[in-house]
Image (cartoon, rainbow, N blue to C red; front, side, top):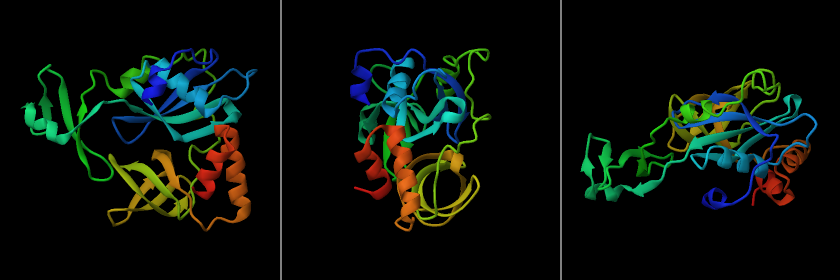
Length: 241
């Protein structure tokens, strides 16, 4: 991501931010990037470049969440607010504002946060929320033609046995899918227990179940080859490293 932020060059001129689907988090959302109907379908790399350059590095795309929506000339991808991190021990050199907010010598505010693995760290507080950043760059309604409501393509294709990263009730989890019914699914988090979640809240599919039949695996492989433009990466997503 850092290399992409620093890279020179412009994104494809026909790409635009068509729609926004908030996730169960103040820091994540799924966006629909539209493209001209007479242009070729963009690759994941082109979509990532568009996101990084469109939002001037303030928003970070999650490549593994990308999904094609050819029925509306769109491409969806999960984005997260880019917030520089610091080790939690750095809080010892800062001034505590509240129980979970610190300020450093340059009067920059840092929030104490915890990732899905239970690791605590400091994240730089953003002046604008992710939704504010996204909405300020959304294409005019008269211009866009791609939207989540009009697309019949699911944002994430998952099966029982897959390992996914997703939100549920504002909490980020990594766990194994035990059941899928439409957009509803049951998840067994790594920390134990069972929770209800939605496939629309999935950030990424971390690994695929080994129980998929060869026909399904081949269809997934062909899907990812077209989406990512890379046979080795598609093979890794479906068959593992």
